[in-house]
Image: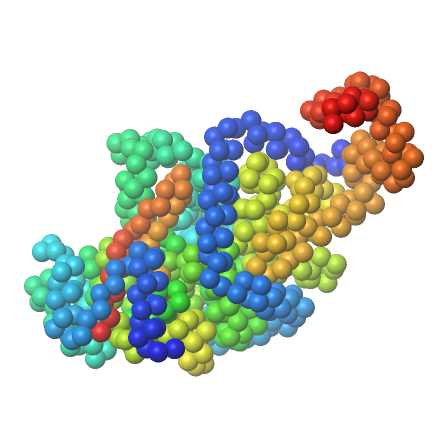
Length: 165
Length: 459
């Protein structure tokens, strides 16, 4: 499948599961897209493990190293799954998975090149050396346990914002 | 051969009695009907874009392989999970499994326990076992949390608390947490989030089940929507997973297909909000993962089922699609089945695991319409199995005498055209006598048979 088609399919399906998706052309635009989602009162946890994460310019005054206290986590996802609109986070490179779970907002950078067609394609490339935790995130945390009323942000983030570069 | 024999047993479950109790609860009926209708529609939407028949055929083969090679896969999984850093236990029955979990927790002085929803721990009564020994367990799935506060039992695999109204949940929270009353689901969810967040952060250990275990990598797969499963497995330093042996998939290459089918069959979602693949304990250089992972593999009768005529029930992946399409389940709800497992798959599993003698009456919870077999993503022949179990029930002399007699009567009458014509003519005259003899069977609920001449005139 063409990369443009994969991108379109990913955006479509991620929006269907209530994630917001923004496609940008440069890191400057990415920084602006992130800023649009932030509030003055936010505390941001942003690991700097990948090239994209290191390149990101985030407002220093809002940064924290403690994701237990953070209201937003900004990080890069390992992959995107077009068919389900999911992003993949894993424990490689010393990444913390609770960091994408505890704060109310998860801001995810996704490189266009890491979007794959479906789960089969992702698992096919995985290899045998598995990290301790691979988590597929498909939209915000949700429940319908009270009278089947759909409510987001139960234990995990209420907002999942994906920025594709 | 008659009904007297099973009445002599210490406990014999009566589906009819349990169903009446559920039918007399209009709130429960409405909630269950709403849930099954909604999930039915969602499931249909979820299956639309996929090659359903091809996928379920493949999934059925994979699950069938597991059932045929179960002992071998338990070994492979155990070896690979151990080399990934987990400690694996083999429990033969509920007592063994509960005791293993209890000792893991006790030896590490873990007293604050958080738990993610799991059918298997319900099956073995783990919470009661631990509470009797002074260990408090907090259920963290919102529905389970509500049920635990109310001291009740889950009414649906997916939505354990669907039978509670928002106002009832509001009052429960008001009483337990001293918060102002509210019946707004969003606000109530936020209250639960805050309450449980404190509990997560203070927890010594997390207990989960697993949707699947993967033999060739020793991994566990967990699907959740709320994120509590992720909390329980990544925040506390100790993770105990309890799962029954048939949950194993032979290879990680089978994971995508099953991951594609399970959430779609359950709620119509292409994937649940979260799917975690957990392989062993935290490795060097990692910031995620429990420091200790203990996996309790439970048999509790499965090996025996796997060797018998009903082994294909072990293919079941607990998606609840068969519950949501079942006309009986939609009417009576999960409480009527007298067991952790309800709906069509529950009928079969309950009898195989707990014994025909005590639970045969749950076989009445079926109209043999076959909707369940059509809905099953792993092609368990549910309808066929229920019908075979009914034959077995009759052979064991457990079918109530009145059922046997009336069915024999109908069989005789429709088996031959002369007998049918005579019977058809005689029935209106015999009807008053029949209804009074079979008072208990409530024949009067059926339309009174009309005399044949009138029938002709009516046409």
